Amino acid sequence: LKADIFLPSCSPDHKLRQIRAAGANLHVVDGPFAEAASRCADFVAANDALLVHPFEDPAVIAGQGTLGLEILEQSPDVTKVIVAVGGGGLAAGIVIALDGGAEVIAVEPKACPSLAEALRAGMPVAAPVGGIAADSLGAPVIGEVAFSVLAPSVRHAVTLSEKAILDAQQQLWQEFRLAVEPAAACSWAVLESTEVSFAADDCIVVVICGGNVNPQEMAAWASS
Ligand SMILES: Cc1ncc(COP(=O)(O)O)c(C=O)c1O
Image 1 (tube, rainbow, N blue to C red):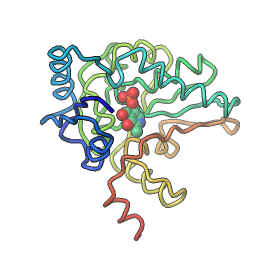
Image 2: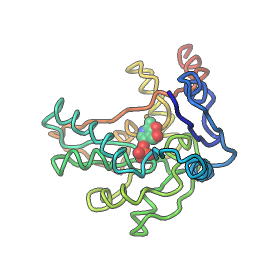
Image 3: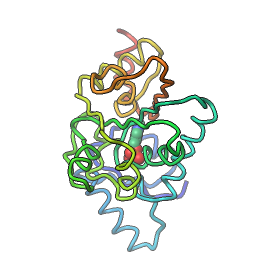
């Protein structure tokens, strides 16, 4: 893989190791996601490189939308899809693919509320970045393209405490033997949230993606 990848220093070691193992040049930037994005922009300008933004790119959003198409193919009766939001590209792609055929429930950690803050302000605004899922969901501001797709269709972003995320992560392991990272457990946590109510005839799809789980955490679960 010929690529230069810029990540913030909060990224977990196992994620960095996997990227290096794939052969990419990894640049770990001191500071949050915004700092890594800015160093990446400098690199792109200096090297005339192709920028692949993690969420603010219609082509990336279209690619993520294929997940929505797969949902429709495998669960044509779907009524609700629960998906975690960082910069919003994944949720936006799914909204476009579902084309109003099912409701998208967006979820994010209370510690990284980029969509909740943007919905409150009526436009993308800087949001706090922190907590256990920041390395995946810690976009400092929701993407402009994603917000333009999400704002009309997602009335509300469910926000989760750190404990709710950890509980969901544990439950996915204990009950289903799914080893997922905190960001990926967020969507599952919505099922326990009092912020959302479901109807008896709802057909719910929970998007659980992201396996960058810390091996030490896994070892602790295995012995619990
Ligand atoms: C596990 C997981 N879920 C959801 C997302 C959300 O992606 P987006 O930034 O497109 O909202 C990410 C982003 O990295 C992720 O790692």
